[in-house]
Amino acid sequence: MAKIISYQLKRSKRAKRMRLAVYCDGAIVVTSPFGIEQSIIEKFISDKKQWVLEKIRFFKSVDIKAVRTFSHKDYIENKDKALALVNERVRFYNKEYGFSFNKIFIKNQKTRWGSCSRKQNLNLNYKIVFLPQKQRDYIIVHEMCHLKEFNHSRKFWALVEKTFPKYSDIRKELRNHELFYK
Image (cartoon, rainbow, N blue to C red; front, top):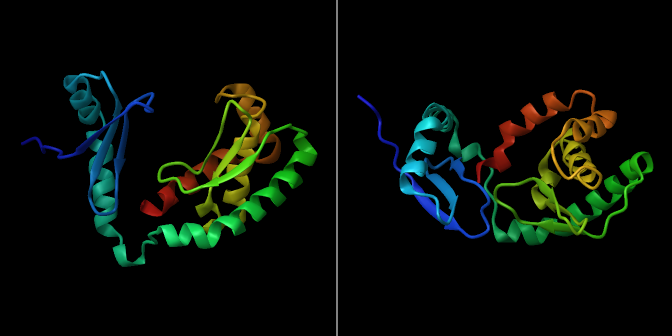
């Protein structure tokens, strides 16, 4: 018998593509751009069904009390620390890369560790202060490399590889953090 997946649908004018998230409380959220038909959303979920069920099993196997959750207060208390850390690490790595950028912003994002804007601003999640240094530095270098290559092409990964030859291992480790599951 096929298991029906219940989910919350959020339509967003900022969304460029569909996104599926499974949270530690079992909530499943699909974010979709406006104009995507319900049948396409249902197929998207159906195609990801195995992944969803694996995530749910994973969260059931974890002691939720041990999972770190964050509040606005955590953001206020840690954003200056994150900004100081990011500034220092960007200066350190930019000795190698020599990229020019506009500003660094520390944000309280739910689904991203960082991003790089077309205006050449580096945006980093304050939660990186809670990561091991290797993973923090990888995120910072990853976003810095977007200053040169605004994509995930081979050229982009070659830039990342200059500093992190085993970047794919770090990416796998980072996926385990999943922004601390919410």
